[in-house]
Length: 349
Length: 280
Image (cartoon, rainbow over all chains, first blue to last red; front, side, top):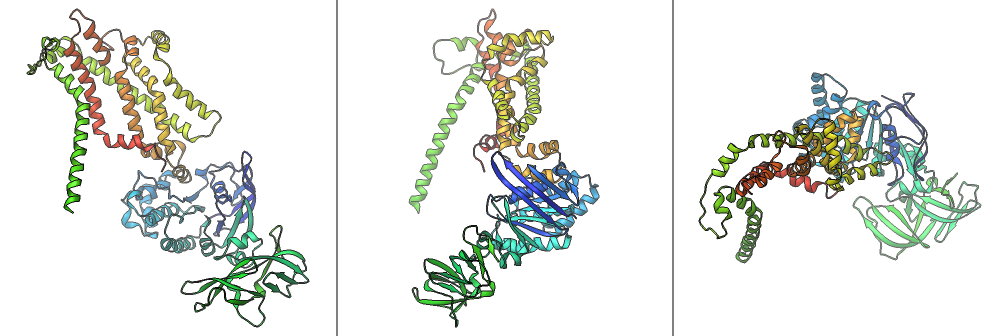
């Protein structure tokens, strides 16, 4: 298995920057997820690791060896694609066997390995079918089997679950994580789905506009976002961001007053807090507003509260009910508050 | 319920009537040709209409006895299939390069290839004659194969290229990371995936080749290299005048193999002709 290291990676098409100055070291057996909105450069970065795209600048190393001039077919990485990319003219057996055949594995060994990979993804009964005769989930598992059949140095997965329905996606997530742990293969996974990123990753790399915004464990990314972009991108609903003025450790905005903030900064800032870090009521509430909307989901209730001009989302008890327009006050968990520079969006500590 | 069933039956009848009428329009010339070929010569050129024709195989037997028809047929088949084979061997890699590799002037090269099809054949007729003369290939099947292939190469390349553009790039990327070389990707992944397109291009090239007349007439000066299309001209220039029933029979012989091939691969052909039309 392999360590992957990207140093000063840039990709430019004409005047358009696809990826800018990406630096990251991925440890052996690590599961790293590249997360970001469409066009943020995450897939391009993965394609440069695979050798399918040439970096304009920078170096790709695998286990210390420079890979820039090594052809994709010689990099010993296996890739799973968004559209599965199963060869339509071949049966599932032939699809899974293809990488073994290309690498000259003896025939008897090919058969054993194909059956073992198919068993791992529970596809043994479908080996003689063509891809067109399989469901989306089965095709995805076939693509996975083709990737794992030859025990590559690294798995590269490009939004492999995005074509599946929510239920199947959840089941496949578990399966992918289980297989990765079992085979202990370094994995780079690209997605724009934060749930996938949070549940699968050892570390998440958040990208936007071709730049890395933050690298960290799912807990670090969730609890300690480095910018308003990360804070707003992760979490469902995302972190509430309220613009106001900070002076002498007190944050003030219409409907908000938060005292004793441990930040020496003063001026315009954005206060960030997660919907679950709020309690309706309390002895010393910091937010007051009117109920704008209530969304009970069964296990919890989401409340939208209008405080000043701002709508804030609050996650509360599943039994909470109130009439629209009711006045409510909210207490924030001050240990979990984040402050960001209002102009640049960077975290203030 | 009964009303719906009735209107459905009526619409079905109308549909069949329209399709039947269209089938008659399409088949009438062929059947007319066949009927000319199977009647005595005198009867064909009689100005009065004949409602009860006399059927005879005389023209058919005469055709095979008096003319080297087997040779013409053999020449046609060899020249046509040889040219289609050359076209496919050259067009598939060329189309792959034009559809997949990024290089300066790629689109210009593509357009140049297609533009050769727009040229009037007469412009190159004389140079081609002298070229083959110098190569001592005049009056040979090889020359016909090369000429047919050259004429059709542009259209075959262009058709195959359009099918290749529809193949998702992910398939190639997957094959690359699986360890396949460019050549293996082409033959093991791309070619099977665009087989309907290749068959379509081959059939179109075959039809163009079977109808080719000018260059064949130029290159073939003896029956050694005559094809069916040039043989037809023999029946208009002899001392017997225009032998209509022989012309009709030769035309029918030339038409039948293509017709049968098209019927046999109909499924591929219809899929092939529409496959490039809409991006999936």
